[in-house]
Image 1: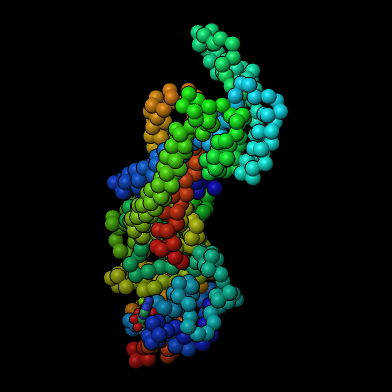
Image 2 (image 1 turned 135 degrees about the vertical axis):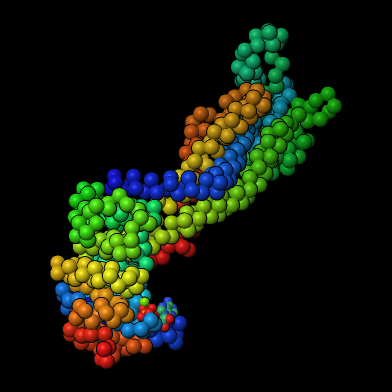
Length: 228
Length: 299
Ligand SMILES: Nc1ncnc2c1ncn2[C@@H]1O[C@H](COP(=O)(O)OP(=O)(O)O)[C@@H](O)[C@H]1O
Ligand SMILES: [Mg+2]
């Protein structure tokens, strides 16, 4: 589903964010990308979204070489790759329902689709009772559920979560990863960047570890570090 | 598509309300430049109309003949004039035709016509030049022709185009040139003001824009509300401009048209001018938003 072939990303001519990365992530897989801050996790995601271009190497998404996707087609790529961040990125002046509907609205989907999809995805993330709440009336965990609902409402085949639990306390983090697992079970490929050892150790998924831009470990059913 | 149109309109109006003061400034400068454009357009049009309406030609001199000139003498003068390379055409008006023309011109004032005894009007040649600048030279060469009548001071009766027409044309020409420069200058200011309002609108909505890109909205979808906003400002400016231009027009008519005795600026021309102003307003708005969008929205 996602293939990196000897990918290097250099910022400003001398910052090696990723170096010679070769990775294969299969359809329906769930993988953690782990590593300390600055190890290149976010850059990995930005390359998948074509937000940044690789300095060297090739990236394939569902067998399409990203370098062959024209600039004007990038938005259509992004509809196939849902995205969740540490800071939720919700619009404060819109309700839960509107925030999720917005993703459909701005991709030109008709009202009929919005009215059918939004309640359904909010039921999936467990927020059916908060449709009319505003983000600042929700807990951090609930806000992250809204942002996951927005990322998933288009039913993308890939979901990227960049430190989605970074702003949450451990009890809530667990629920968020469980939700990502549930989404993964519907057939969506899920990649989650994190440096939360507890989570990685609990869920026992594939672990791809980055260190200073290089893949130093790629292990099925892994734990956070060798020593732990 | 209908859903989208509503979406774009809603986004544009919300954004304009947020930046009321700037939007009003952009609209005002746009209408100011369009009022100027309308004014220049009307003056130039009226100037052209004045010149033709008064039946004066700037490239034509009138050569009056003595009453006792014979047909042969007349033909010889005509051949002499026609041979000159500067001359485009020569038209003969007989005494009778001159009288007819006179009666036609004063048909509304029978008392003037009644006072005429016999036919006091001279026959004449209307001599058209290839260019008005030859008027003097051609007249000079006719000075010693005996067929041409003389006035009480012994001067040959050769009449040059009315000075007033030349003056009007000179003025409208100047207004056209200066006006064009001023209009362009104001239009540039209007475009930059629209561009600033759009930039503010983009800034106010940077979070939304970020999320739109994130979830895969196309660039055009992101741009449309801003283009709608810019063009709307342009059109609003044009409508204000048209209203002011029409007010100037009616004022101008009370001052000038009495003298011209003619409808110098027709309703048809005003309608045409209004369309032009709306078009230019739209272009100002579209250019303004385009500049803002090119700088601030990239994939
Ligand atoms: N836009 C950028 N310009 C320059 N350097 C960047 C940019 N984005 C990230 N970097 C650098 O690249 C490296 C990897 O960053 P990042 O991918 O954000 O790592 P992580 O998400 O694991 O913290 C860091 O050294 C960071 O400073
Ligand atoms: Mg990061």
